[in-house]
Image (cartoon, one colour):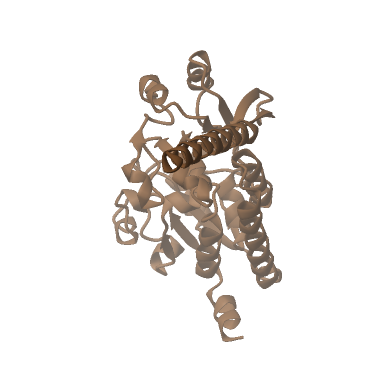
Length: 315
C-alpha cells in the first residue's frame, strides 16, 4: 500500500509540475508575439506581428535582401524572376512582379508579411490588402549612396538589424575604398546597352537612374546622361557621334555577345568595338539594389580602370 501511495503522490506531483511548466511556456509564447505598426516608403501603415514566421517576396532585389540574413529560411514564396540564391528555386512561385500575382497561392501560404518593390503595381498591392495580407512596399534607390540606408531599413523590417548593419558597413567600406582609388581618374565614356532587339534603336539608361549612378561611381561617363528620360532609345547616328570608349552589355544574359556587335550595321567602326572594349555583365547584379551591387561596381570599375586595380592588388 505504501508503495502504491508513494507512486500516486509522485504521479500527482509530476502532472502538477508539467501543467505549471506548460502554462509558463504558453505565457512566454504569448509575450513573445509583438505587434508593430510600420509605415512603408509610400506612407502606408502596415500592422505586422513579430517575430516573423513566414515571408513572401514579390521582387528579386527583395529576395536577395532577405537572403542576406537568417530570414531567408522564413521565405515561403517568391516572384517568377527571383533566382538568387539558388535555394529560392525550391520555393512556391507566386507570379510575375509586373504581371499577374496568384492571390490564391499567396493566401494559401499564409505569410506574416509580403515585401514588394516599387515595380510592383498599386493594383497588386491592393489585391493583397483586400484579402487581409500585410504588404510593405519599398521604393527603389536611384544611387549607390542610398544603399546603406536601404540595408538598414530591411534590418528593421525583418528584425535582422545586426546582420544587415554588418552588410551596410562592408558596403560603405568597399565603396569608400573604390572612391578613393578612382578620385583622380579621368572618366571613361560608356554606352550601357539594355536591349538591342532593334540594333538601329537600342535601349539605354539616362541620368538619375541606379545604373547611371553605378557608371559614375565606377569612373565612367554615361553617353546618354544628357538625354531626357530614365530609360530611352537612341539612334545609331547618335551612337556613332558619341563614339563611346567602352560598351557594357546589360543584355548579355539574353545571349548578346561582344562579337555580335561588329555584325550590326554602323557599329563596326565604333572605337569600343574596334578596340574590343566591351564588357558582358550579369544584369541581375547590375540592376538589383541588393548586397551584390558592390560586386557589380567593382567589376565595372576594374573594366574601366584596370591599371588602378592592378596597383591596388600589388599594394
